[in-house]
Length: 282
View 1: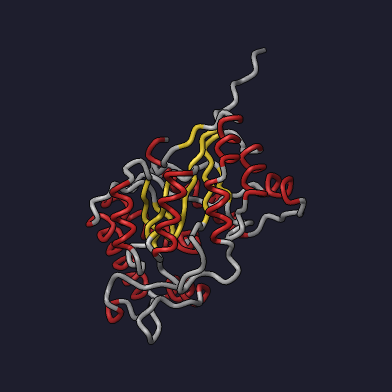
View 2: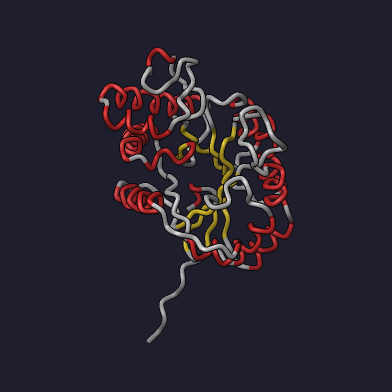
């Protein structure tokens, strides 16, 4: 009996937080022009969102998606229109658990959520950039109510691809030597992937970047490329040219940029016959 053909290895390399700062934006452009970065997720209300859009227009091969921010950031709508989602300063709340429970329990909060998500989609559309993909800051789209609101708005705004953060623990353990347990987020991500695929949305088969968030250095990225599973994979990172106001403490921003631009990463992609592209390419 003839063995079935193995799936080819396809790869999207994404930078999150595009538009958060000039340090992030310049790193995204550098990692795309000089390295293996193929996509970036835009914070439409980020401090440097306008600069990010200008850079994206100069790089038409960069797949730019919407990085929905519903926690730890600035909303698009005026705070008085979404009081259930913001704190006294008018910023999104930082307590994800409290926000999640509020959204689940309050019809008014759900209406505010839907309005803010739609406003962020509209703000992205106003840039004139083609929508390559959608995801959410802190992967808040794992919340079923948030996922529903995104799917509803996405139908109107041309959403065709989304991240479901399913990270194979065996691959991670083989690289860093640490045993990895599957948590509840892994289960929710699988439920989300099934739901998205039923809706006709493209979803990667596996995603890497969770276990090493803020620490995807060359020492981890290169062996990961050598162990990349068959199918469509997304690797996401947080490159920047150094810390910036509001950046996460302890994140190795410059080291992640160095990993994405390391010639050895390109060599590993070639050596393993990996096809790279944006979400829309697959």
